[in-house]
Length: 109
Image (tube, rainbow, N blue to C red; front, side, top):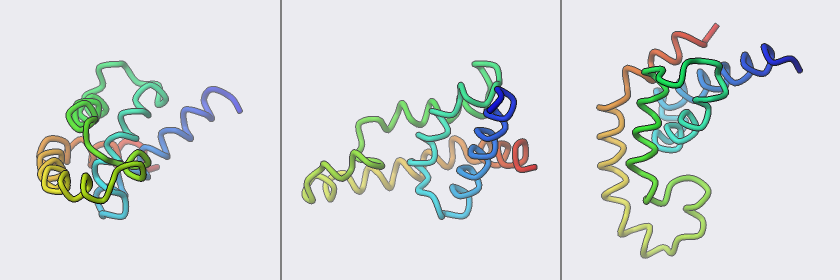
């Protein structure tokens, strides 16, 4: 696979994730974490506004049981953190919804 093919594959994945975040088929915070990790894979400047938004979200929620690490948390801890997770989803959408839509528009070819 060439570099260009790899970048195109990662851009398509970014569009899929962002689209899933918008239609709630992908947990918004899990999607934000994935988009943050795709930041350096889509061949854009480091300071790309759309991807930086998700790096900010990921940074703010890194203490929460999100994604695969959630499996290691006790039921009690998950219940205790659920209100904060819900508040974080609300905040993350307010903070990054336009960037999410932009990623879909940019890479959904």
